[in-house]
Image (cartoon, rainbow, N blue to C red; front, side, top):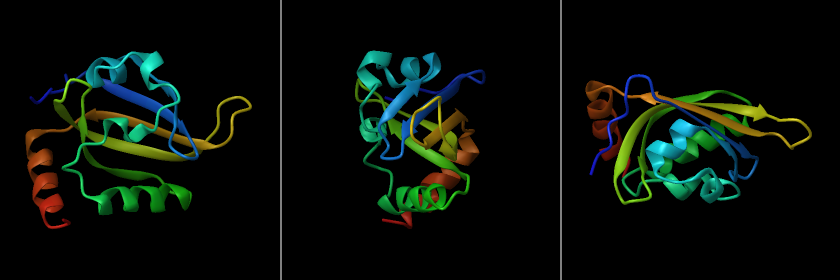
Length: 126
């Protein structure tokens, strides 16, 4: 079952350099269906949907590990087995306090047209 984000939803998470979640905001927890306690320390791939091509995440990781910002459309899974689409912007080398460098991801609602274009593109990447 698809969960369509509200126009005002803004999902934010921070990970360490290996992709383990250090922080998740209330919108991310609500949409993904997890409590903050369930997310902290888990791999961000906990919300990875199997429809997403591996090549998309390779591009994401290659980009942010290279110190550049990655932007793209991502289909994620919810805890209950549903899914949701987002337009994600992933920032490299974000550190919080004395924590090691990691990554910050900010996500907003993707439009129907954007989702359709992403689905068409991702079908060619399988």
